[in-house]
Image 1 (cartoon, rainbow, N blue to C red):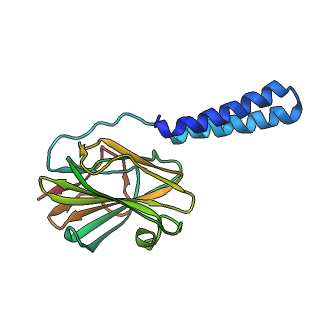
Image 2 (image 1 turned 60 degrees about the vertical axis):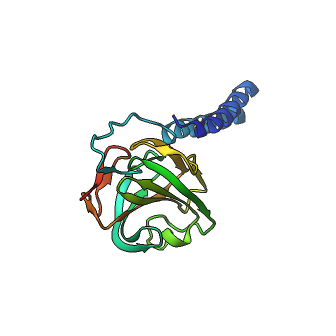
Image 3 (image 1 turned 90 degrees about the horizontal axis):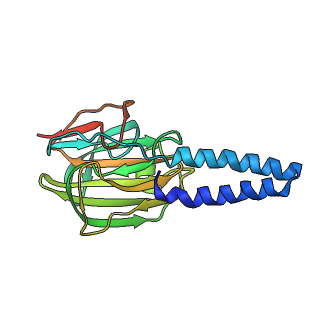
Amino acid sequence: MDRSGFRYLIVFGLIALAGIISQNLYGYIIAGISGLFLLFTAFFFRDPERKIPDGNDIIVSPADGVIVDISDVRDDDIGDCKNVAIFMSLANVHINRAPLDGDVIEVKHFDGKFKKAFLSEASLENERVEMLIETEFGKIRVKQIAGIIARRIICRAKVGDSLHKGQKYGIIHFGSRVELILSQSANIFVSNGQKVVAGETIVAKIK
């Protein structure tokens, strides 16, 4: 379980305990509701093991979810790029993983709106955190984008950190979008509508 979920478990656990201790109908109702929230929290913040594929030229998915867009874009730091967008529903594991070995050279937070995460405009208009990674094949960018429900983006990686492919570096609370921006030299292995698993699904290979 991701550590950011523990405080929610403690809060809901204490509320449930207080409801039981009260020994009245309303207390039991509150305890039951809190118990349901506690179970949902444990489910949402789950942290299953992942088998990271070998190969230094293999780029893995940074998030669980469904591919909602693959498009050509222009990035000031990378140049002409391919953008792979992943929508994460409430049912998905929300822990984000590094797509490739590399050094973090930039982390920026952008304030913004909270539009539905599967909309293309969410990429530029929603609140987000962008991380730029220098790899042996050049720069790649990963965006953590808030959605209509998501209100908290956690990026634990900092400038100067060295990340390994599949390494956990952050999480977005309650539904969101993650985008992976690669140079045109990447050979994309996924397609729109495909389900992907963070750290395991091969998104692309470097040509």
